[in-house]
Amino acid sequence: MKNATRKACGAFTLIEALMASAILAVVVSAAIMPFTCGMRSQHVESRQTIAVSLAEDLMEEIILKPFEEPADGDTVYEPESAFGPDGGESSPSSFSAIDDYDGYTESDGQVLDPAGEVITDPAVAGISRHVTVSYVYVPGQDVTKPPRFFRVVVEVRYNGQPVVTLTRLVHRIR
Image (cartoon, rainbow, N blue to C red; front, side, top):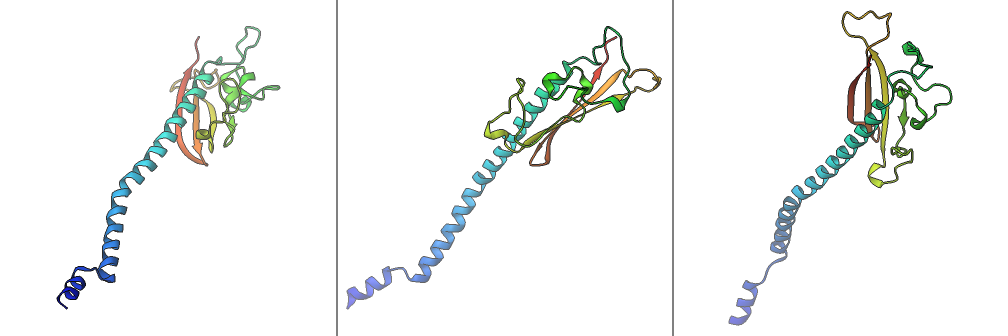
């Protein structure tokens, strides 16, 4: 009879086992949470890095274009209503001046590389780009004369939410 008492005292009850399991679950979830948050943060930062790179690439492409439309050696002043692509210019590869990019948009998953091909990398899925180009007049400049600056804004979005906005002033050389 003495042996039966010792075995009963050394065993876990069901309640003790459930309590131990609950404590273990809390400890494990608390230990895993920083790793989960870290992975989520790394994913967001990775997307932001890609967005910055895509914005910089498009901005570089834009500022390499001439300030104004090439026209038989003459400088032609175009009012803001003439912004955007001219006839026959349907893609960045056919744009002939900076203002042609005004209103240019690449929708989700249709982001183009510098060669004009759609980027198929899964990291770019859900990313879109939009460009706005506008004249900027400096204080004291006569607004009836051609502007000296363009403001170029490239916005990169992920699933419709802004991730990066890159703005640059481009100066007319003359």
